[in-house]
Structure formats: structure tokens, C-alpha cells
Amino acid sequence: MTRSDTRIHLEVRLPRDRMIADRLRRAGRLAWLGLRAVVLLTLGLLRRRVRRAPVPSRVSRILVIRCDRLGDMALTTPALVDLRQHFRRATISVLAPAAPLALLEAHPAVDRRLPLSGRRLPADLAGRFDLVIDFTPDENLRGALLARATRAPLRAGFRAFGRQACFSLRGARADRRRHVVDLNRDLLASLGIQPGDRRPELHVTPEERGAAHARLAALGAAAPRVAIHPGGHYPSQRWPAERFAELVTALTGQIGAACIVVAGADEQDLVERICAATPDALSTGPLSVREMMAVFAACDLFVGNNSGPLHVASALGLPTVSVMGPTDPRRFSPRGAADRVVRRDLPCSPCQRGRCWHHTCLRSIEPEEIVAQAEAVVAALLPRQEAR
Image (tube, rainbow, N blue to C red; front, side, top):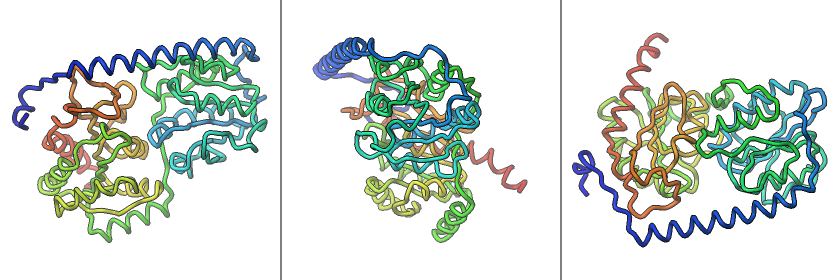
């Protein structure tokens, strides 16, 4: 299939043998989850149930659990603010892996950040909280088991395939058709908390912002600055690095953008491939989570795959243009006024697969499509920059 063909017609032929294997795997997983639900719910009949919503005056210590990645934490920030507004006198702690936990430095809704390493609850956290909320939006058991291990009298999380047996409060159902931000609102509403209509929000300090501006100035990056992120947790989420190189050349030539390629420590090979393919790409080298946030905050536009850094950039107020492949847009599209998503509506998409043998949903997207979206965003930014 040539590029000119992809602009006119796309035909996805799924190999029958692979489709059968996929269906068998899915059927096996559903059978296992169904059996798990029966066992957990049977055991859950013995648990202590709390019928009433938590009373703010009786909750002084809250623990929020997030066991997943950067984007999930960024999308949880509206719920953290809602918790702060409802439980004004409570201390709010967040338990999460180190990288997503770093996003919450300087966040006004969080009092304590507790690092999570391994699968067990740190021993000193058991029995220390009044209310524990696990925001895992699917059937994964890890967060639910951690919540149960806290022995908190009030424990809440999403209902999915029996994981609700770990909670003492009745939470919302983990509806896969709902956006993650809306799911978090559903969970808070089930606890008697009135959620607001907030968007994800993160913060960088003036010192971090100043260091990022100095870093970009040393690279010779003048406005408009475009942060490029070619990585993604799963290979199926990544638009080809060669296309990113073409995009960098086009953005530099057509709108005079300084393109700063940013990636995690384990994604530096993607940066090297892009920089080797075009002299227009600028690389910051490996960055910490906080340094990455500050670089995004110092840029005018983010362009990248649908992954954690995309949601981080959007939560920092940066306009974004993202490429979406197997990810379900109903759950994970950034929803800011200046966020734009480029994707193909194919019979096999969204498939949520970590790997794919044809990858048509991303390979068929042309750099020119991304450039057109970026030009529109930059054109809207120019009047604001001139007003300054």
C-alpha cells in the first residue's frame, strides 16, 4: 500500500487465523474474569458494608491510590481537587509509583505523596486512614487489594468483575464507554461528593519554568516552540519515527517552528532515529518527569502519540495535536478547547491491542495532516503572542 493509496482508500483485511486466536483469547479472559467475580463476590458477602456516604466532619485522613502511569494520574487531578473541596479539613495523601507521583509536586490538592514500589502496601500505612479511594477504572485488582490492606473503615473503588469485594462502600461501575475523567466523577458522586466540571491541571514552579527556558535557549529554540513526543507505552501506540522526522522537517520549513524532541530514558532510540533523519530536530536528552513538565510548559504546542506525556501537556494548558491508533477515543482523548486528535475510524479500531501486525490505523496517517492541525493552532496563538 503506497501513501497515495492511503489518502484515497483504506481496506483492512484481518487474517482469519489471527482473528480466531484473538477471539479465543478474549473468550478465555472473560471466562476467567467471570469465575473470579463469582469467587470474590462470594467472599465479599462476609465483608463489613457501609450504607451511608462519608461525612466530611468524620474524615480527617484520606488516601488516594493510583497504580498506573503518567496519563492516568494527570486525568485524576480533577477528582483530587473535588476531594479537597468536599473534605476541606482532611489530609489528602496519594499512593502511586514514583514517576506519576512526581506530577503532583506543587499540586495544591495534595498534602502528602507516598511512593509505591512492588505490589504490597507499605507496612506503616495500614490502619492510618479513614477513607481510601482506588481510582483504577477497570478490572485490575492491584489497587483494590492495596485498598483492602489499609484496613480503612471506608474504602471505595469501581465495580468490575468482583473487585468491589475489597471495598466497604458501593462505588460506580467501571463503564468502558465513559471517559476516564467522567468515570472519576461517577465514583465521587457515588460517595455523595458533588464533582465539579473541572479539567485536568498540573503545576510547575517558577524555578522549574526558568530552568526549562534556559535549556531551550541553549538549544537555540525560538518561538514557536513545538514539543514532539514520539514514544508510547505500547508499540501499537507509536506513529513511526520516520513520520515524526518528516513532520519535524515540515513544521520547521512551513511555520518556522523549533521542534524539541522529548522522550523518556527508555525511548532515546526513537529520539536518535529522528535526529539522524533530520537536522531540524532538537533533542533535550533524557529528562526527569519534572524537567519534562517544565519543558512542555515552556513550549507553545505539543505534538505526539496518545500517551502519558500528551495528557501531562494538556493538563499544563498546552495546546496539543495527537495521533491516536488503537486507543479508544471515548476514554482517553484530551478534551481541552485547544486539543486536536488525528485518527482513522477503521473497522478494527479501537482495538486496545498492545501490538498489531498491520498497524494501518497509524501508518495511514500522513505528516501533512498533522502539519495542517499544527498550523491552525499556531495561527490561533500568534495574535496572543503579538498582544504580549
